[in-house]
Length: 289
Image (cartoon, rainbow, N blue to C red; front, side, top):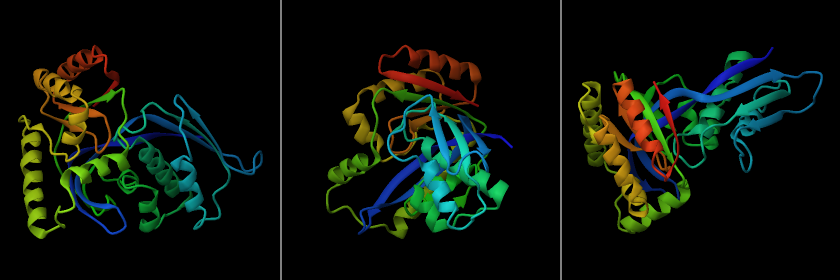
């Protein structure tokens, strides 16, 4: 039986980077918001014809091992009944954009394995696949994320807003982005404190409140924004277009290069897409209800 499933993506409405751990990872406090997007997985069990999985990627090249194969390898440690699978992944989003497209592919695969074979991946194994995977494999539309992104608390925020995603011609590597942020802050940057968390939670409520009331929130908090904006003046242009076209909030999609604008009006969102697509630095845009 063939299954065709859509893959989710996410944006970070807020992203604060806290202390750096001894293992090199960073503690974060973020607000994730996911929506189902355009990338699709077609999955078909092949119990007779083949003896191993086959993954065909269409639309865009993926270098290195795909997260989907890692999901299958991990799932089979706990469930031996998963047959060989023929999988086609239709890619649309560029890597390094920060929307968690690869993690969304993995999340969609995890959901499918759970629904069809009862395969449940332990939290620690899911976390090892990537910081965004646990959220994108969950049924939570919005959640706060702590730890390195794997500790989630569901949020109920009434945000009836569309997204406009803007993908520039450059990419942002997550490891390099954190290194640049560390360099900027210096070795004296403090550890995570309860007082810091309370301030961030108040910040979260302030911005989510504005967006839920459809008031302009402007640039949403993301510690990586200034790092990337110093390297690419085009983000100043992006902010100007977002403001001029009636966006209620805008910012970076995580530690990646993609820029997003939030709109309560489809015409405004389409006007913004037209404006962005005239910019030479823009690779593509994607409009999502």
